[in-house]
Length: 454
Ligand code: GDP
Ligand code: GDP
Image (cartoon, rainbow, N blue to C red):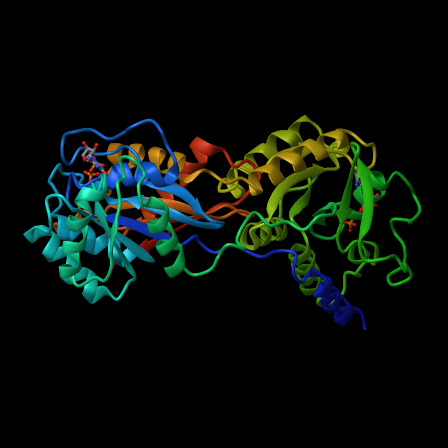
């Protein structure tokens, strides 16, 4: 029967959207001046030296995208955390403790020429307790003569010391092999997107003009708008060429097959919205501009946001609006849709065709944002600035800090903030707002979550 059919249609949605997990995090830990930053630069293949000869100099960036033999991970330079927001040096052990908590694997760097110090020994204790995989880097082994210094570090009880010259590159490949060996295999992770036309859902409460818009877009009047329920036998999806590109409009049978305004119509409408969203990448929510915005309109928009799909809002029946109505519409939008200022908006008429050509550019913008990945280095440089300018408020004598962040996925963009303590919801929203201001993301919801060390 009708309602079951709506549910079953969700089946061919399977597999279209494989949310990426966060990349594994590898933290580089060690005393000041052992060569952490040099090693990080070596691994990410960056030539320009951010390294300075002053111990404990803060770096402007702390996290980077790295890749070795096809395995991707986020590399974190804990040297950048040396000074906290109050300008106090974090103890090496303290810093290491935080790093170990947040990372999936640790590169522990020791200056092989200097040998292990008391500070190193304190970190070793903590590393061994953590149970996290640790790769011991015996750094500054620039030539064969210093190899014996590396061997002395067996004493630390962390297993094999890897002799490395971060400065010259000696031995760094072997260390990376060792890192990759202990990381979970996520090499398949990527901006996977199945081929084929991009999938659009036309959504909105009954009578806003979905069917009319579909017909307009399809450029034909094959189907009478007010057709009797259940008489059309259209395929579920329709492929329509717009602006030289083919688009897949999903679950159009649900639009063509009009559900009568009977008991439960609301429920079926929301079910269709959900089914269509599962198959879609971007949604066009139609709102009838000629009458006041309703709660049901807001609900549909919210459903899209919750689903993590890209969003365009089309104010339809523009031909029926006069100046007064348009004035009130703007007030309603300000009142009801303030939280979604990022959704591209088009004022259209499915009947007259007004501004229908603006739909495709809006869809393109929204999908592009939905697919966007911010490089980790850039994200953290930006985050460093906002955290320095607006540190998290001190609570109970403690200053929780955001140490670094990664973009865990696209479609939609999801960010994970790694923090040294509990981050208040208000501060998380502040960061989210700033991320939007900086990077735009017009047309896509974004998500910011926090991973806290206990
Ligand atoms: P960090 O404070 O642990 O990040 O250490 P840096 O990366 O800033 O390095 C501190 C100093 O050690 C710098 O002067 C580097 O040039 C130097 N250094 C780093 N790695 C090596 C190395 O493999 N061999 C030698 N000889 N010097 C190194
Ligand atoms: P649906 O239930 O969302 O699929 O809405 P329909 O496409 O069936 O449209 C409902 C009614 O609104 C029909 O009578 C349409 O002719 C009318 N309609 C749709 N779009 C427009 C428009 O842009 N302008 C005007 N004046 N009427 C429209």
